[in-house]
Image (cartoon, rainbow, N blue to C red; front, side, top):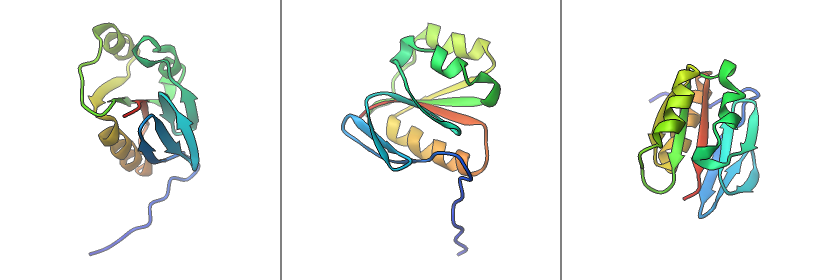
Amino acid sequence: MRLNEISYNDAVPIDGYGPGFFRIGGEKLDGAVAVFATGVKPWGGFEDTQTILDQADTLDVVFVGTGAEIAHLPKEFRTTLEDAGIGVEPMASPAACRTYNVLLSEGRRVAVALLPV
């Protein structure tokens, strides 16, 4: 088996999560957050598409962590992002964190918007 050390270059990976918080780049952040390769921003939930749209020119897809369980996204939220050319993939927040880190390490143009578990 070959093991490779993961390199994120200047990007910010998600280190962990727990009830109501995320640990990103060594810092504990409470509540919902949006994580981009360039940094972290507070996220206002499904009513807040602007935080993601502000990064649209650097994204191909955004993973949306819907909390402890996967849930359907509001139609308006999904449509607004897709109309801007951003793919939207809902999943439980733990899976969204893992998927984001893997694709980020590959240099992919991804982001994640997370509701806490």
